[in-house]
Image (cartoon, rainbow, N blue to C red; front, side, top):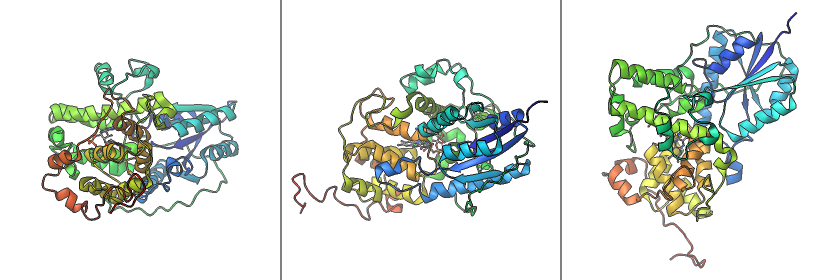
Length: 437
Ligand code: FAD
């Protein structure tokens, strides 16, 4: 008689049923499956940078995503168990309780996630662990180089990928094997969702937004407008669903290819792929560099000439620097959890080059507030802008006055987000500690 197989599926950055090869593998390999999401507040870097837990906007987005995932799992004979605990101890306890033979997850570029996974592997001999790529356009075996040999710049990466096609999405399951019986205290997660929010979490919201965007002419003009500092329609706004895995990047790519085949293909539609390739590059970059993604001297191993200034950091956070455009961006970010790519570049350049602050404080704040926080994209972009990442140039300092003239010539954005309201001089004491008069 063959042994009954019991699996655990650890949901993390793959909060969906569509195009989820990890979930499909689990469904094919085991007789019963426990689907679990772990709320582990110990992972985030905030405590190291004097910041609080994740902000209200990402929290709201996650809540809506988990609620929908639980419902969709319910429709295919399953359900989602939510546990608030440390990841390793929660998963170890569950492995023991259900007598798991197999544990599944989506491959993840996060350092802490991978540490936890390695720890589980080491302490659960005899259990089969499966980590499957669902967050990327490609898999390591379809890359034309090993991850250790990832090209040193995005341009080299893009050129190396010219002949390789992204993987196609797979079908959504109609049913899943049932959950095992289990007596384990689930976490009472607040399932209230703010469905009126412009960016609301959940797989169906992500898929609807994808279809809406590609049912218009917007993709044809993407390249001309994507750099704008403002405007819902000027970029795809797919990032929150992509980061959480409510939306599969392969599904996005397949929709884009259909658009190119049936509606229009031009430089703008290509540029959407180009930006998705940036995302892809940072994913493999995080896999390659692991902990180095979070280190002050970055992958270049060159310490920037920056430090930490409490007063300046506080002004940056609260939108009270001497730079109105930066203040406006920081106000928008705090109040919505989203900021355009242009805005992110401007505030990051300001933190590093005008305020001379250690870039990691900025990255940790973004981790706290961004609705689309993605470990690889966030820390990779910050390294890039701080001059310690995958950029041959040593510095990327933005001229803030010129940026304001170019991207907010009439000051409307700055006015809307009250960038002038509390603008203050940078330091209240001079270098010799005398109060500035
Ligand atoms: P679009 O312009 O429509 O781009 C389409 C998609 O391509 C995006 O959804 C995103 O998945 C990807 N993409 C575009 N630009 C980049 C980029 N520079 N790096 C990686 N992927 C990109 N993006 C995140 O998803 N999560 C983050 O935590 C994050 N942190 C950032 C921090 C800094 C300092 C900077 C400068 C950029 C960061 N980005 C991050 C990248 C980028 O700003 C956002 O992906 C983009 O603004 C999201 O809006 P959109 O979906 O409309 O993008």
